[in-house]
Length: 171
Image (cartoon, rainbow, N blue to C red; front, top):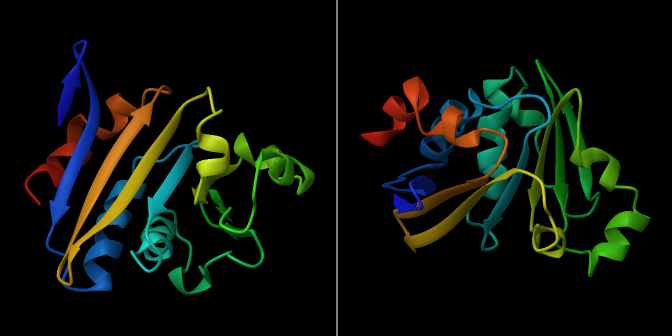
């Protein structure tokens, strides 16, 4: 963890992920901290496990993970459970104008769920409100490094304290 100005800015977790199930189980625990209106930016190379991570989040809010698929071509998939998941993939969009023209901005403040955006680069640099960012990096064939950063919305209180943090810090 990095500290700056007395506040924790980043939680970096390196895990030995021997299977997709390891990533799904971690994301399932992570998902227990999600609340209506949360926004998650999900970054990583092609094939790093972004959509697999979303499957674990889906399980945490009673959505069948087999319903989750990459929205690369549809741009937006919506899944319903205890909360809705608005799952976007902005890989094919070139700029913020295309994002707005596609009508996607209405899903950035969901009242009935959470929004998860893969390849958020076109909006992340202009985004002023709170968000969580999960970055998945390949270390080698058997290990991935997850870096979780946040801005605003009391994410620090929810994810870096209490039961959730105790569950993951020794992983």
